[in-house]
Image (cartoon, rainbow, N blue to C red; front, side):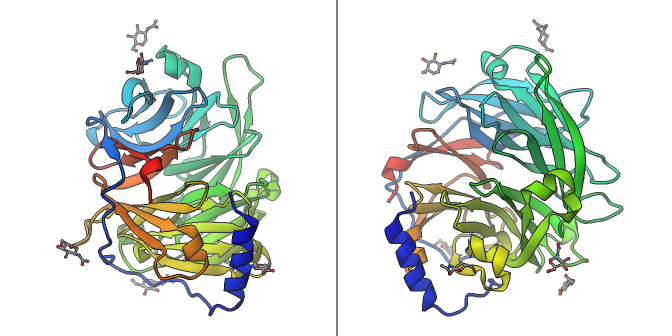
Length: 407
Ligand SMILES: *[C@@H]1O[C@H](CO)[C@@H](O)[C@H](O)[C@H]1NC(C)=O
Ligand SMILES: *[C@@H]1O[C@H](CO)[C@@H](O)[C@H](O)[C@H]1NC(C)=O
Ligand SMILES: *[C@@H]1O[C@H](CO)[C@@H](O)[C@H](O)[C@H]1NC(C)=O
Ligand SMILES: *[C@@H]1O[C@H](CO)[C@@H](O)[C@H](O)[C@H]1NC(C)=O
Ligand SMILES: *[C@@H]1O[C@H](CO)[C@@H](O)[C@H](O)[C@H]1NC(C)=O
Ligand SMILES: *[C@@H]1O[C@H](CO)[C@@H](O)[C@H](O)[C@H]1NC(C)=O
């Protein structure tokens, strides 16, 4: 947890620090020290490309979206037995439903009550009953979220639920072609029917281009959303080109009723920001800027009250960081350095950042990297906090990392 000592240090150090500016675009990141002492192991090759991961509420299980769109097949939700290290795939739920015609399953989110896992695809998401999925029985898809292809697009990628599971926020990466920008779709959920979850599309908000990651503040008041580009000439074909993206702050109460008016502020967040996490005390928002090879730390209060002065830290990590997670009681941040564009002389890996050193502006905040498969993308952490699962998308494996061996 965030200690008072660390908060005091934060104030002390930041008050005397120079202004931090958002990092420019980079190609290859400098090589780091490899952390060979960290214990890690890989699953066998999976039937699809793993994207999103979450542990189940039940002990010993986790879920992974296995994207099979490249093979022209329906994607599945994989059920993992996590008793072993690494875990083992035990079932797959085919993600097929007449109400949502979509092949490419991507982001996952577990409801707070643990009963459902949401998997984004196409115009929305599949809603899967976790108990049925674990038991491997048919009929585990109990609902869908379905947006409007013509208005908000069909590039659903990440999903965040409110703490009471009553609303779902789905990022539509590219929006609809008519508007050619990304947005966040808002759905209201209804769990009152027996064995089914129904949903209503409330509306959406446009937020720059290539909208991907979202995360809620711990108090549920704000949704932080990254857009890879802010300019009007950003296209999916131009993903690898120079473009400063933004971090937006949305007011969740407004988002629930009148989504298009929910933006409180936005700030420049480096080149192609893609994911964010929020410290458990709600004070810091950390963002991966994929094409800057940096992780950025923002002052959450300043994002609302003084956006121009909200960027506190900017740290070099590996090449093309995507996912990020806290580890070891938030004393570490780990980034998934994807090298997704195959940059010459780059390597993939998981950069391990010492948060306390980062916050005090020390040069040695980066401890090194853990070797991975190809295109490490997203993470999940076990309930006992001892195991990190990594989706190595392009090598079609899940990698387990023993966090007790982390420096
Ligand atoms: C999970 O793995 C453990 C260890 O191999 C095994 O004993 C158990 O039966 C497995 N459970 C399921 C549901 O496959
Ligand atoms: C479950 O689904 C599979 C594949 O669609 C089908 O072959 C099987 O008969 C179903 N089983 C039951 C009990 O409905
Ligand atoms: C960012 O905020 C400014 C107002 O401060 C607004 O004019 C602009 O449209 C916003 N950009 C995006 C992409 O939402
Ligand atoms: C448009 O793209 C060019 C590079 O192709 C870039 O220099 C410029 O900043 C972009 N403009 C906007 C508004 O994003
Ligand atoms: C964070 O921002 C708030 C509001 O602008 C400010 O009062 C506080 O001093 C800032 N904290 C740090 C560590 O810069
Ligand atoms: C990193 O190290 C490898 C192997 O020594 C080397 O081939 C590569 O050029 C280095 N990359 C950078 C960016 O220094």
